[in-house]
Image (cartoon, rainbow, N blue to C red):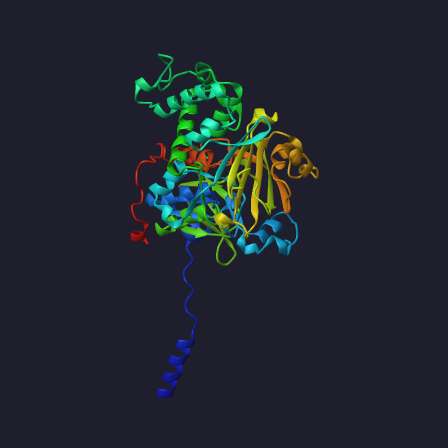
Length: 499
């Protein structure tokens, strides 16, 4: 009898554990699917691009339960950084030559941009305390094309006095304009007078063109101010409110004053560090991340509002997660976005710097009027000084916007057309070790998201700074919350305590 009891006990110990009960989720059409992860969330974020990761972090800090997913097996989406092998694989170019250096020494941005030192992105980093995860270094040079020559954007009073960008008498007029910009205060009427007349008060209809006329600035100077200081990518701003022009010039000046040399910062190891830092913030505050997860479909209720997504569970079978709203990049909502213009870009690896001052990192702006185009061309260069390239190597990007239908990525002649579009910028590169061309459509959401609960970001533009990207994040926040994001507040005081 004792033997039988021992035998039965052994049998019980060997029995497999009971299967955990599978949580089932109800879909609007009456069907049921197993729950994906926890099953129920306040928000689901699709894509781990920088914009989506910033919003995900903010939502998580605000106490929202967030599920953040990406079809790729890496962070960053369209704004990721890749090594040399990944870059060659992306363009189907085989294996890099050994003389280019070790693949792991490269972190090549897919959406190359510098950060304005006083801009909105820096304020977002500080308000969330995400800056503690990152290390930045100043960009060394800022240049602009005028009269077929590359000129340094003045960095000191002495450089301003000797710059060939403006003539002798024009320097006085430009100095008066800059003095006005520096003093301008939207809350102080005494700073809003030009020529003794109050004309720059908030809500003023004075255009940028009219403001330039009041200061008597020449066309070449206007190109310099509008494109190298205010960083507009076309001349459409000339017939819009001058208050925006002044604000943008002030931002440049304030950013420049922080460190000198240039107004730009850039993170060590590339821009791919940015989305990962915000993803870490979201995870600290309870966000759930899933990479390499295909999104089978977005699920809508009878009224057309998004209520969740279908993906695959751990068993590779369909699974459902519900939510109150979805945030995502345009690639997840092809039926809800509209094509606008195309970005064409060349990515090149070089063995030499590209600027007259031989800086290891720099930006060169080619204003549209100087190159007979409808949009500026941006040339962006970084190197091992920011830990993004092998020693002695430089990564250059030449980008612009076009409406040329022949620049479609599917067109076999795309490269030839892209070369034509980028020609003035490509001439500045000199000899290149290797290069690749790409083009993509800039997509914008068709609606604000209030009705379908799909809050969709815009594609990344051709500009070489983050101000438009930051504006899109601000717009996403406003659409979700119904109020503007206050960049002056502190959302997270000390991440180390939360970790």
